[in-house]
Image 1 (tube, rainbow, N blue to C red):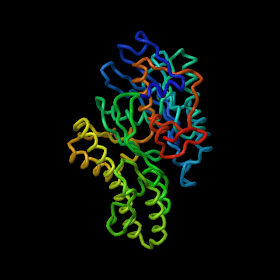
Image 2: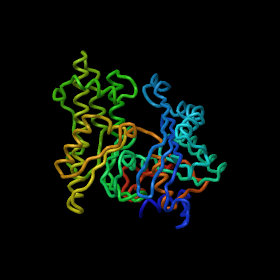
Image 3: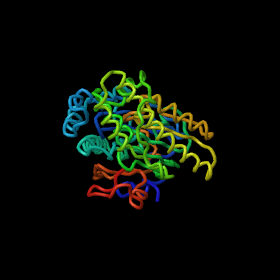
Image 4: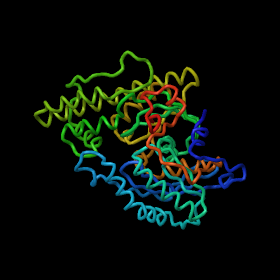
Length: 382
């Protein structure tokens, strides 16, 4: 089952060969409110697959959440309500367009903090209704999956490592709406481990960039940190043991050098695990299809040590390596607009009663048939 079938459960419909998305360039407004960034962007996609970002506006809530050391869902949702209108107006002005210049509106419908998701999705529905535009409900993870196509014309298929604050998984991406999960975290995401360990070290929020900066002056070989899932040969990840061990060691650090050494060890451990699992996925891909393209997307892809490690693994296996431009590694609306435009090209649109989803796996069939977590009331985890 491909993702087209998965999306149909959310009210997706095909508009047919004569729909608005066939045979011409499409201009789409994208909205992203799944966590702590309120973002809007306008992207134009040609029939040949070339994407041009006409505007991209991101309002960060870092200052709102820094005092708490992490994202507070209620504060995030309230900020989205306050900021969404102004952010969209700036994006439309930056693209030098009115709403009559759009072919559709795409909005993140999940996964994420559902209070925030509802804000962007509701705004998108309002624009679609008021202007008679098709609505495309986009999976936030699919936005990350296509984000590399914002910087270059990238052909499908490719192997994807999606690594962010809330998600860590390897996927085979055959096209929009057609992705298979190869491995996923069984507990915490790599970005969450960065943030929680950074908090234990007394660093600011967000913790990932702060830990990376501290690690530059550290000796990563000084601390012996646990390695996860050594007896398994699959592509799944686990970071909870590393997070716990490093957080305990943080309490023993007495000097700035101690903290820098621990930060370097943590960064090296995360990079090693990401590299090992990616190496397995590439070798499996080589056996089945030969060498190809390896794409790394998500906020953690901005970490220079991790990116360098993954580039080396790709080169060793004969894969081309590609990561989105830095501006599109973290959450943004340009990737949502692009995913929406690619769906609109296929004539896939969403019903106006599409619901916001806190959980929404990219490969829902694998998540349900081989879950890493027991599905709860809100569905299978991403």
